[in-house]
Image (cartoon, rainbow, N blue to C red; front, top):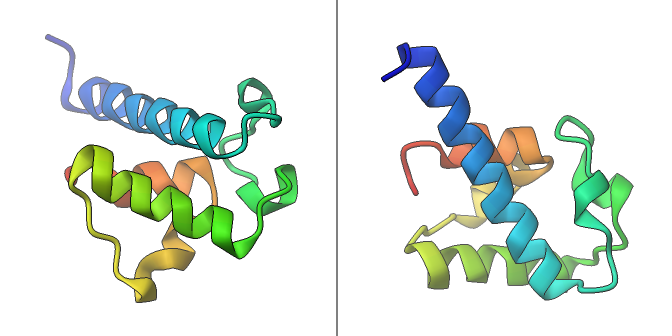
Length: 89
């Protein structure tokens, strides 16, 4: 087993992949393979507020993660999603 940080990095990458997969389901015309982890998703994709809510609902449905509305800004990019969701998924 790797160090604590290697395990955390792997976990965060897995979370990024989960979020990419959810986006691919919600917006199948978008190319999620080219998403940059640090750039806000709305700057990279044509997502509206309903798409964002669908992402939150899929996190709840697929992974039993409840994201309060006050925390929505913490899901701005793949990196911020990973930071927020680590330990919750």
